[in-house]
Image 1 (cartoon, rainbow, N blue to C red):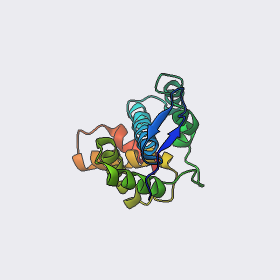
Image 2 (cartoon, helix red, strand yellow):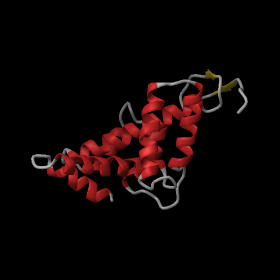
Image 3 (spheres, helix red, strand yellow):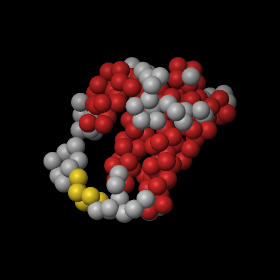
Image 4 (cartoon, rainbow, N blue to C red):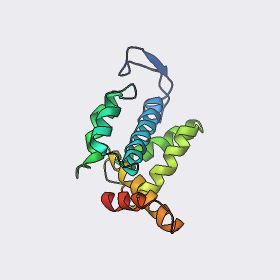
Length: 158
């Protein structure tokens, strides 16, 4: 991949200069997707209906254009991916080749796990289901005393 200086206009009002096409955007996208998936899962595990919770998140300060466009996909994963886990993971690996950034490392780990679980060709919104299944597996492994709703969330997402 050749290095390019690109001047781009983000989905906000500030222009940013980056050294590699997509480097910052992919890390931001992956981080937001992971955060929104886990945030939605936390609301569900807390006994809150995820649909109004997602509306609250998209209408708040964290409601980036990406989150607004994808919140409905988290709740109802489409069969046809807009942007699949495998492609996102490839982009994150390219970012990690350029710099070992903590957010990219965390995204790499989650995306690798998602691919291992069979979500490689699913939309990145499927990270909600990956998080729910992982929480359920952790709860089952922890045994008695683990909140039942964690296991329930895993069954809903499966």
